Length: 146
Image (tube, rainbow, N blue to C red; front, side, top):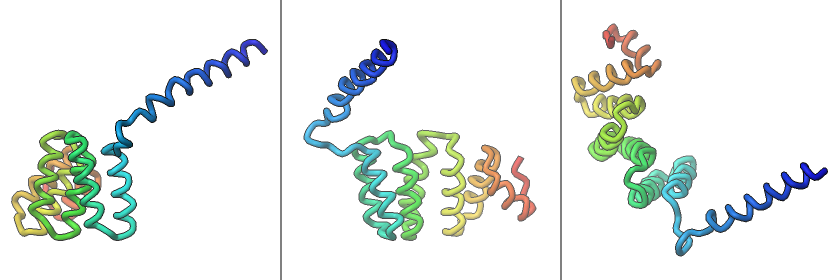
């Protein structure tokens, strides 16, 4: 019984100590992750522009938040704002050179704007990094990627 009570008290103590740190945001500031999570809801509702606005707020809050750049780049692609999409995907690749989906997505953007050489280069890189879908696509096209 003492052991069980001791553990209950310890759990309560940890929770009490965590509550102030969890709620210790200045002026109820929204975090970059919260902006990003909200943007995701707007994507599912079909409001791409509002999602872009929220991803932008997430990036302003945390310029190292790679997922926000990636997701905003995809949203720009959907809106056919290809140069902006490339800019965000470039930022992802600059910060994380092993980001497979950034290469595959940027390859799709380059393909859409007719820059086949850059598209192929990105598709090959994505395949080399292990993207099975891109590997299959290149095999289907008869293009070597290894």
